[in-house]
Image 1 (tube, rainbow, N blue to C red):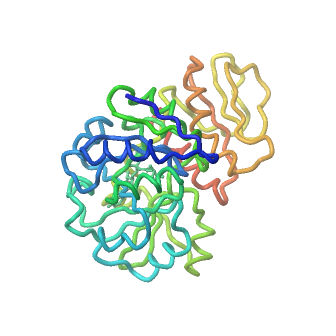
Image 2: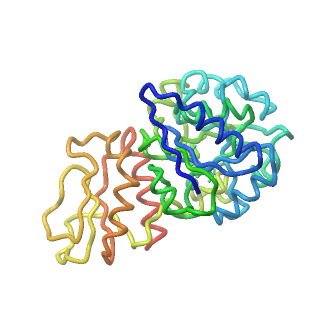
Image 3: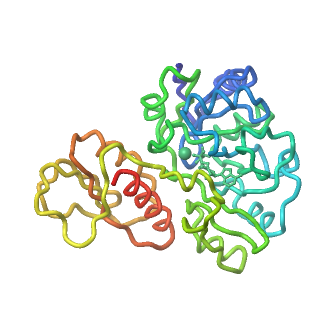
Length: 326
Ligand code: TXA
Ligand code: MG
């Protein structure tokens, strides 16, 4: 695996992009930064490349991928139809951390969508992602660049630790901005539904559409977001949400705190945002969890964050991690 550093400030990163696009065109895999987390890219129109992507991630075939586009006007290449609400959201939030699930065209192999009649698409805003997709000039299938069930990577180093020699190339442009995966919205007979909370908050969706976008709960019998029902985003150390007072015995416990470390001699502590800024907390979340996971503690205790704005997405990830490791 080659780690190619990209210095965004004033530096010409065209040669690195050209090399990465050539790898993708040849059916290879390239990890690259987006504004949310690092993605592992494969040419979405090449079923063999996509098959390798599933293999490298050890991802089950029932968990469909997100397809990344160069611009909103690429939609026609991948989807047959987009309702007015989808177009309104795309106009407002693309390029950016919003994924829309829409009826797929046959140009997208069934492997990408796990056989579903719909495809998840988004236009990333990260300049490196944007340049890479532009150079490839094809839709780019890219899940988060981690092994299945692990934490999404927010740095190139995290990608290298998780996938290392299994992939050809990692484009390293430093830590990602949002730190959590994109918001996913699907459209059905009852209108838009929120499949995964993310950087575009429920409040922002409501402001744009003029109505609440209901959350698809786990109670729903047919999984509408297949990967959602898999408990994702988990460290290896068991994680519990802190309810009430911190545990009495803390020496073998690692603590994920929101604004300030609670009292106690914890094995390790990470504070997500001393100023209580949910944006900062989201950006730090996965890297902090990775560090706590390495602290050799028996378990991790996570302090809840306020559940508004970005806090909805942060609590979604923490609850999933807690379920998976319970
Ligand atoms: O921010 C992100 O979205 C990152 C970056 C790399 O773009 N990507 C990402 O991909 O988080 P991934 O593979 O980790 O999550 C994809 C999830 C699936 O697990 C599933 O929940 C949902 O997207 N999804 C994909 N296609 C779908 C479809 N046709 N219907 C419903 N849900 C779908
Ligand atoms: Mg993922």
